[in-house]
Image 1 (spheres, each protein chain N blue to C red):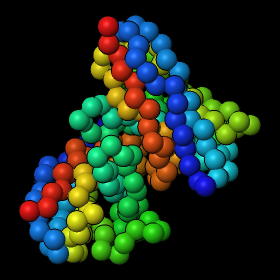
Image 2 (image 1 turned 60 degrees about the vertical axis):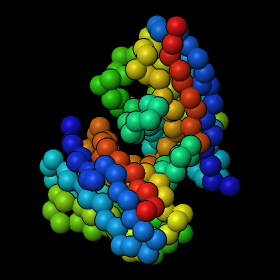
Image 3 (image 1 turned 90 degrees about the vertical axis):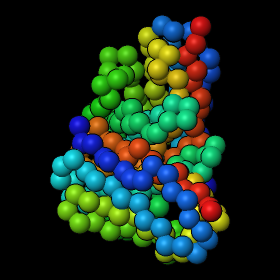
Length: 115
Length: 107
């Protein structure tokens, strides 16, 4: 089955760190650009970051630049998001998505930043 | 950044109605526009890509069109299972940006 499964979310204090993971299956992971998109509670969708197939190119939203780091391990069919210096406004469901088309989404993992 | 102005923000219609949602891009994005459906508690689902192409498996009552920087999403005959929030999204340039969403309800 073609799917993406996120993990690693949870409750963290402001200033803390968290690492999200996304496990891909059912397709050739290394052939696709991958992305993270988030959705704050009751709000719309916000693109967070993208990484090219070979990890040569990484892009970030201004709101997370210098705090978040996207990476991937094609040998493990996995995508990651290292989140540092977390703020209350980073509270959201984080989705792993495939390709420029965002044609495949995981179920999401909730990150809550609160003291 | 490219701004995507989506309207209306909410819409109430009856089963069988024709429903349309529009999205205006702040600059030329060619046809690099997607439409997504999101049901409560679920991840968004891609319905239409490249402005007018139906994703495989998506019912044909869904369609999309474009006119310059103006994009329209249409449901030809609203069904109860279409109750959801719909988003447009451009992928012409990074950062990818989304419309604000349209919450569709049944009258």
